Amino acid sequence: QVQLVESGGGLVQAGGSLTLSCAAPLSLLGASTMAWYRQAPGKQRELVGSVTSGGTMYLIDSVEDRFTISRNNAKNTLSLQMSSLKPDDTAVYYCNIRRAYAPVFNYWGQGTQVTVSS
Image (cartoon, rainbow, N blue to C red; front, top):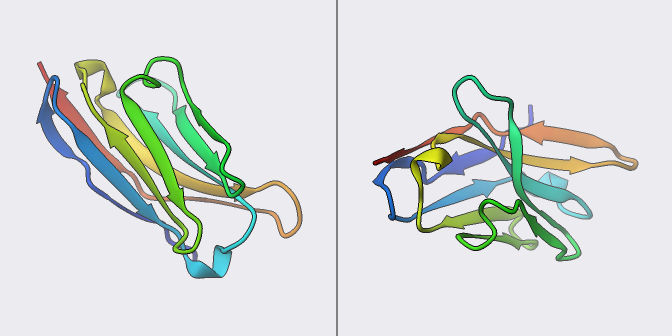
C-alpha cells in the first residue's frame, strides 16, 4: 500500500506561518505531478498548488502571494511554505501524487489539519 507521509500542520494565529511537508515513496520516483489540496468544513476539496517533476509550479490566486510550493525530485518530497495565514486558510491539507500516463497512479496522503485563529 502506497503511503504519503504528511507533517507540519497545527494551530497558528492569523498572520503566522506554517510549513507543510509530504514524502512520497521512492518507488514512485520519476515523472509525476505532486500537489497540495485542502478541504474546509462543509466545502469541496480544492487544489492549492502543484509542481511537476519538470519544475512547473502553480498556486491558486488566493494564496500565490503568501504561499510557496517546492519539490525535491531526488527525495520525492513536496513542501508548502505558508505565511500571512488567514482564518480562511483553515482546512485539512492533503498531499497528492499522480501520473496521467502509463504507469498511471494517483495517491493521497491522509491529511494534516491547519487551523488559523483570528
